[in-house]
Image (cartoon, rainbow, N blue to C red; front, side, top):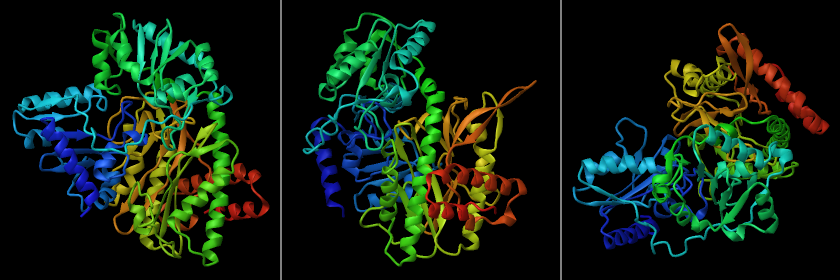
Amino acid sequence: MNTAITTRIDALRSHMKANGIYAAVIPQIDPHQSEYLADHWQARRFFSGFTGSAGDLVVTLDKALLWTDSRYFIQAARQLDGTGITLMKDGLADTPSIARWLCDNVPAGQYVGIDGMLFSHSAVSNLAESLSAAGIELLTDFDPVGDVWPDRPALPQDKIFIHDIKYAGQSASDKIKAVTDSLTARGIDAMFISALDEIAWTLNIRGTDVTCNPVATSFLFISPKGSTLFIDPAKTDDAIKAYLLEAGVTTAPYDSVLGFLSSLPQQKVLVDESRTAQRICSALGASRHYGTSPIPMLKGCKNEIQIEGTHSAMERDGAALVKSFIEIEQRLAAGETITEITVADILQKYRSQQPLYFDLSFDTIAGYGAHGAIVHYSANKESDATLQPTGLLLVDSGAQYLDGTTDITRTIALGTPTAQEKSDFTLVMKGHIALGTAIFPEGTRGAQLDALARQFLWQHGLSYLHGTGHGVGHFLNVHEGPQNIRLNENPTPLTPGMITSNEPGVYREGVHGIRCENLVLTVPAFTTEFGRFLKFETLTLFPFDRNLFELSMMTPAEIRWVNEYHATVYARLSPLLSPEEQQWLRERTLPL
């Protein structure tokens, strides 16, 4: 029994009873609708012990359940063991939604409590409508934390800093003008932004508030008449204020935002109801105008300076990976003990030695053997596996450089691979190649390409449940929109300048996991009488394990792609390497 978690759940239930709440919903979210959170907002982790980046906790007076997606099924099952919390595998046909479960399990006339700063306006509207039909009332002013979390971390107070225009490629003033021009064209007076990555991009500011994501806790009001950044005063100084003022931006305390919005004169203020907290929308009152923010598309389509910087960052990142895997191989050959945590430490060591390095872009996933089947595995002292000269090692890692963000996954054979390992790997790579070489008409969406990466796995009765590709920021969040490549429909077309991951995989629980990931840039291909066509340019530079390819399963075109990619990797990385490192890389990029 996990007494720490059960004690917290009991305290939460007492808090709920005192406030007349029958059920509470605690999301993995903050007031900015972020995927990755500062420690202050990790309430769901505090109450459940589950550390994944996605998942919502529901606690009633006699039950507790946690919904999470397929990336975390294995991890969640292990971390919830002994807590009394039931795992709900979100996305499976027999798993009800949270709203459906509440309607079926909360008696009519009872109250469901949530914190309206942690749920978007659209999420609250949908949940309230569902509950109302079952005679259940939704209260949006319930703080589930209350006094239950006595040592709750404070909001981060580290100072923000300016992302130099030589890396950003566009000034904050120009970005604000692009946004306000878009608003004016739509007949809108102003805009309110909650999303931390949108604020960081717009103002060319960065911070250290969220691990691996260089953002700063803040809100931003943009208007042609002047803009306001709501941020803790401790996070700015005179130089930052002067920089912002030059761009037409004043500052105000972070906690003054609701009062500011509620006192605005009547005007049309654009908010994205799916990315803006319910209490913020309520504070705007009649001034709120729901619509799509122009910033994700402006931010998602990188400019030439950003693309050039990303190319450079990929070369330095690839060189760091070469140095890392040379050391890993040498230490294994010498009989040293190398664990999953050791692998992560070695990668961070060599990346941190590269020019313009800032941080990791996410915590390294180094999964050996069966751990590779846990999609977002994170090694700890208890789980840290020792590498042996057999089986597969899956390494998903990346870094934040001032001129670009990287994200790469490679699967490595530590011994002579089995027939199943080679077959699984080759099927994944066939999908990776099919997507990476796709040519598609302008306006194509990610959902229309996703099956290209899955088709060969499907033919063998295999699949994977996560998305095939996510957008990547520029010295920003490694997971960004507006585009993605997955089975679920997303109306955003893949557009020149967008950087997206290409990462099909296959996971055999208790056996191994395989994922092969490069980042790709959407670029023009050609134009015909049928319109403009686009393609992907591969950005990531590091070889795939040649020992894992089953050539009998590959076409000549697929083999040629691997050989040409490896030739490019060697040509681009070798100038950054010593002669010994060049020799190592040459051997691993020889033609198949």
